[in-house]
Image (cartoon, rainbow, N blue to C red; front, top):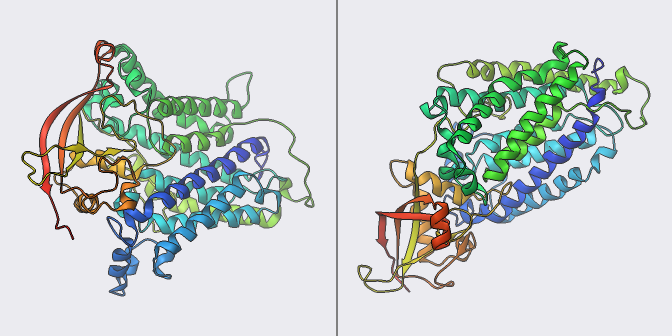
Length: 490
């Protein structure tokens, strides 16, 4: 690093800008496909009802985080228009087009993505309550100040991205150490691959690995999350291994973070959480080399003076905003995935402080028989979550299947949420938009007479069971959790 300019981090800037933009593209596509049946005008939790509540009292809008839909009334068409604008802008940034102009051009594009997606997240209620939503928002805000391709990135912005990776990784590590005993006795990953929210095609293979390997996984996780993140800051601390430079140590640390996240990617489906962490970890990857030729006059370290002022102001802002997050990291009552300001900047992150020991799945069934007690029940198949025991889990990440994820949380709560009762009603209505979220409708668009929800305990089939029965899962019925329920037909 050379004063204001992080001259050896030009390649990191390319990965960061294009990678974060690509994740925004995925997020907007996911929203375009799923928001309307989940939160639209006839959604399971209509966003318009939330906005109407906020508009009913002058004090209530302050209780909502910023959203454009407080100013412009929500409609499904406006939501779709916002998504399409986000898709176009994100695609342009992923292709590097705004980066060809002055630094304010990509800045405005990223801030537009940040504001647009924040407007969606802040009315998304439980369907947008995941930690990676605020992670994407914060990453998009910081990416706005990485500058253009004809100048080096500002040192302060690169350091702020390291601080984001540190909070993300170290925060997750501390949550685990303070969480369930399974992380301390090294048994957590003997369960995690089987009980994680949405397994992938290699999750069963990972689960069946020897116990010593799972203990090694936990040790490796603790090292990657509790030790390695500190070394991201070596370029500014002046620490290095003899024969190398300070940036080389940070590059190795980034490589370890990326390697561990890649293992999580191939063994699970955590939406864009792991993908975003990989992209952000590239912020510490140093690649010495000449910057592309500059078209601007000489200014401090090759960065326009007005851009030095803007990025320095962002740095000062972040120092102030980061105080609560820094305290939280070392607090005994550490918060996980928490924001400390309305704009969701300098957040606290973390995941899987405890690991569930068994997998309970809620399966929805329907029947067309008049008497549910003697009816033949058929299962609705969800897109990603386990259902048919013979079906091999698929890889969906970084795409986010929101309904499937919330179905995993249902057995962990004390009661079934309101949105789930509305889901059953939509299935009784054979609502086309809701059915489009599913993999298989056993009634092919017709209305069933009755639906119910039953609970099964799932476990991965052993190698012997897989060979004998060609099954991926074994399951055991635990009982009915809701229903049967019906509704009058016209």
